Length: 254
Length: 243
Image (cartoon, rainbow over all chains, first blue to last red; front, side):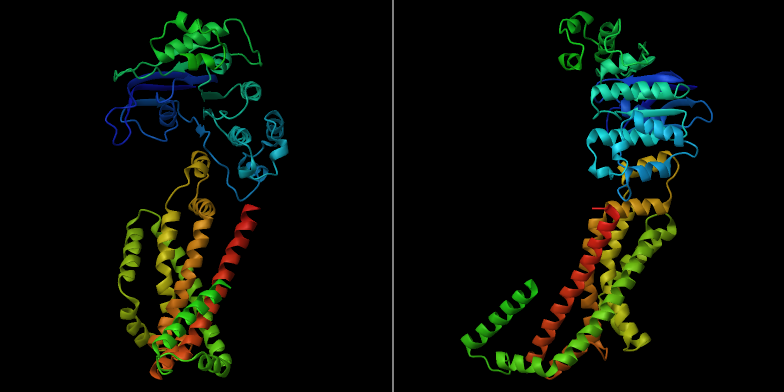
């Protein structure tokens, strides 16, 4: 599976500067791949270009023929005229009953299947939205902050579950959480912060590609430092290390 | 109850003006005369106002159906949609009193003219709201259907109607008042039935007491009709949202 972008330039209508210019990238699936960058660097825009929701101003996007790419984001809502369970069963692909039951258990949403979407907490909303996408027929699922309101242990469990149940699929995971990005991804695509130069290069670096909920694997902290350095573009690794945190505090400290 | 309070206040102001300025019974009838007229014509006027309300309700339903059809056609970007929208807007540009004679000439002074005028008067706010609602995507809900290829025009209309249910109920209730106004205007202009026709006759007789009784019945009937529409909307909302 291959998605390649060459010299991609995109500018929002009425904006003088492009979000990115002449951006090149390559995504080789299957596997868990992350798109990382600070806020406003164009991650969601790039995801929408890959899913063909928007068309770049310039550049070429080569996607392997026949790939089904789905793009999901965390502001999505389920329709309110039926329960969560009714909706998900109605939109699931045929023959996914077993997977449905197992994912319902893994994502811990059994208790809310009879509830309406508006009655759920933010984290529950994220989980049921992800669930319905996982029950679709897809080759690539782009998840844009799809678990942003879910607590960290549950999020780690869900990401491990995704990797376990869908080894032949490609996940493009967009997150601001450097730790989980390093922990679960086999490849991390970093959109560096915009420093004023029109031409920004996307950086690709390997992640630890863990399958289990291993909280402190060997080399985690070093990878997180490297990732943040790549994302910010100028911060020396030593300066980040001095803050001595392995949580999202690192990101804040930078 | 609120209507009754407002009506009594208005009567109070009228009678205060009458007695403070010493106006004649011919200009403003005394309370006794109003009571006497209402006792004498209660049944006849009640039947007339119910007749008007029935026409208004039918006209209202017709307007809702018309506005739905036009809005569904106009929500797409096609040439026919654009033409439909322009025709609908142009029709509204003519005052109903200017169009009414043509309607009466073609359809006579029976129920068809009253129904049509009532529908024409109340359909425009419905149309504007329906077009606005049906043509504005609810991205947060529709995104999933779009990316998975499940989106159909029926589903879009369903999502947009559901997400804007409060707006739909409000505009439907509001247009109910206009339907009542339309039916009364039609009756006042040329029809031979309904409370508007009764008011026209009272005007020719310069009998304000009769007009005051008619106004009371119109207000009462409108309030009851609007409450019924509102209750229906609330019931539908409750059934659909499950709350």
